[in-house]
Structures are given as C-alpha cells and as structure tokens.
Length: 317
Image (tube, rainbow, N blue to C red; front, side, top):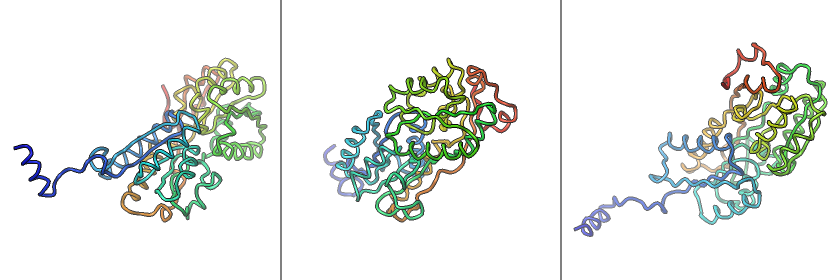
C-alpha cells in the first residue's frame, strides 16, 4: 500500500523535491566573531522574509575558515564544486578566495571594506563580472571625532591590525590620513595572527594615548587579549566594530552587522530570482550606531561624557 501511495503521489507530480535538488546558498566567513556571525544571521533572516527557508526551498550551508586564509581557499574550491546558486563570502579574505575560485557562479560579498581595492569589482555602481555585495567601509571621521570627545587629552593614537588583510590596509591608510589632518600622531602595531594580538597591544604601551582597532578580523577575533593589555596600561581602547564594545572597548561608531547581512541577503534574493550580479550595484552599508560601554571605560580610568551617553544608540550595561 505504501509503495502504491508513493507511486500515485509521484504520478500526480507533487512529490517533494529532494534536499539535493534545492538551490544551494553557500556562505563562508574568514573567522567566527560576533560581527561576522551577525552578518551571516542577517542573510538567513532576509532569505526567510522573502520566503526562502533551509530544507524547504533552498539549502543553506555555512563554513568558517577559522582565521586561516589557506582554509578559506579550500572552502571556496569546495563550494565551487558543489555548484551552488550563489556563494556569500563574509570578509575580504574569504571574498578574495571565492573570487579566485570562480568567474561564473554568482557571488554576493559582505563586510568587505574596499571591494575595488581588493580586486573584487570594477566599481560600486557597475561591479561587472559575477560579483556584487555590501561594503562596510568604516565612518572613520566620526570614529576619530568620538575618540576626541571621550579622551580629549589623547595626542597619539595606536592602531592594531593585520597587514595581510587588504581591507585593514585600506582602513589604516584612511585612518592615518584623517587622524594626522586633525593633529594626531599615529603609531601602528601589526599582528599577522590572532595569537600575535596581545604582543601587538603591548608594543603600544608607552607610545599611544588611545588604541584604535579597525574592522580587522584577525584582531577582532582576539580582542580580549588586546583589551587586557590596554586596561592594565590604562590606555583607552576603541573599536570600529560595534558588536565588540561589549567585549571591553570604550565605544564604537559603526554598522549593525545583522542589518548589513540583511542588506546583502536582499541581493541574494535577487540573484535567486534570476538577476545577474553584474547588474546589481554594490553598496556601502546603510546607517551607523553609536555603542558605548561605561563600565569598560571606567576600567581604563575614563568617564564617558553625558553628551555622548545621551546620543548613544546602545549603552552596554
């Protein structure tokens, strides 16, 4: 009887699709940390809002490179072999790995600060090729203004970053230019791996009056080690990543990465609907949030002014 019922359902053309037959949305990130995780979740939320659910009418898979660029390349090649409907790389190293692995499969990147400089697209308005996405180039001028408002006595700003991340090189170059124009001295300290972040922070002790961490995936993934050094040395630490403020930074002005993921997710929906990525303009993420952490600030010997508290989007308790 069961076999007969199965045959009748199949003959009626209502046999449910096998999971392997569903369009594949393949998502990868260079590393797992709160901002990139939020971006991934934002993509999934945008897909669900548009009626796409894992196991129902799409397959949604995610893999992290655990901070290893070589692993990012392996994941990219594996995804290409899986023949997905679209690949969604999160952060510059993963996006570059995917871009090198395919010139045909649609790609929607997230959290790439300088997609033109990284060689992913020709321009924001006309990306060309098979790639589009959402840039998270930081509002650096606003971030420097925030540092001045909270710690007006600071004269030298230390920056910790990984010079192997193309996005970080672009961000630090822009940060240096704006900071020096505003009268600051900038001191750089580099960390090529997450294990090197603590030593990079120590190298700024006695040199910097405040520390700035850009949206550098290597440093953000090991932020607590930099926070520990900075608090012990009483050097206020700021980040460009709002999701990292709760982890011990004084404050940040930046993007809500869940919302950034949703912006990119809307592009993924367009691609699933048949649009060519080359016809979808790449964009810089919309909107910024001010997140402050008065408790963390106190551990650096800093009091956040009431004027800053009053305009904060989020106050970490």
